[in-house]
Length: 103
Image (cartoon, rainbow, N blue to C red; front, top):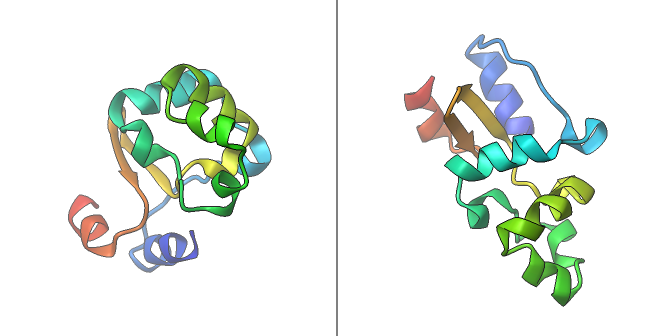
């Protein structure tokens, strides 16, 4: 996240930050993301939050019907940053080369 904030500030790009770790996230928003972003990309399976899940929860995270509840309860398992560029355009994760072309 720090690299993303630094990049945005350096390029003088205004943004609003929704901290879903503190503010939470609702099911309709996650469902909307899942229409545009594959579930296996949306979940940060390499992060400590995901790794601490039980095997049963990890299996549930692979199913769209149960993954939403898990992401709402464990918001840190959502890959960040997730940038909304437009109604249906997103950047997931910070890749400077990609950001250079999208902004």
